[in-house]
Amino acid sequence: MLSKRIIVCLDVRERKTTKGVKFQGNVDIGDPVTMGEQYYHEGVDELVFYDITASAEERPIDIEMVKEVASRIFIPFSVGGGIRSLDDMRQVLLAGAEKVSVNSLAVRNPQIIREGARAFGNQCIVLGMDALCVEKSSSIPSGYEVVVKGGRERTGFDALAWAQRAEALGAGEICLNSIDADGTKEGYELTVTSRIAEAVGIPVIASGGAGTPEHLRQVLTEGKADAALIASMVHYGEYSIAEIKEHLAQSGLRIRL
Image (cartoon, rainbow, N blue to C red):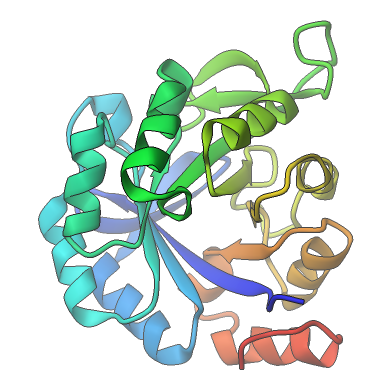
């Protein structure tokens, strides 16, 4: 059995780490490079850096920030937001990231997943998916719709079908974020997480809603996720990485201590 992973997410806006609730009311809370280095020393397994406004503003990602992160941490990290082409992926990976996350771009051009996987390997391509709970319909039978541009644009894509298609195209991992749970600290959305985890054969990272170590245990067991992404609960000093991992280990989960 593979160890479950704990991943800290740093949402970045104008070179500042920012945090909101359900993608709204964002407040700047620190420097992403400094915070990433701190979490690395605390023992986090991976990091994710999302430029949350790059896609909406149609601008490239901050490559210099990626290079600075790579020079100061020595664990895997992925980068998303502002990835517009295969060349953008190449630049991010050459700057030192292990993975690139595509969300809005993949919805507009699903073939970018296949192209990225062929060029750099499946393990480098992460499908970022923001899912919104909606009324079930013939076009969205799962009741979860994919949204893009930081939750500002609905796509008409069914989240479950999109996850399966992305896997078929070559995505090596899916980072699934629940819009409804994002930033609430009331727990992950277990239903959509477990349904997608059961429907695909690649790792699923659960995102959105973590507030306590018990929430992570729930999503890694009941939600069947391979990894749990956290933000607010460590950004605001409510829990340390060590405390979270200790709780999970005592619950019987295999964790990298």
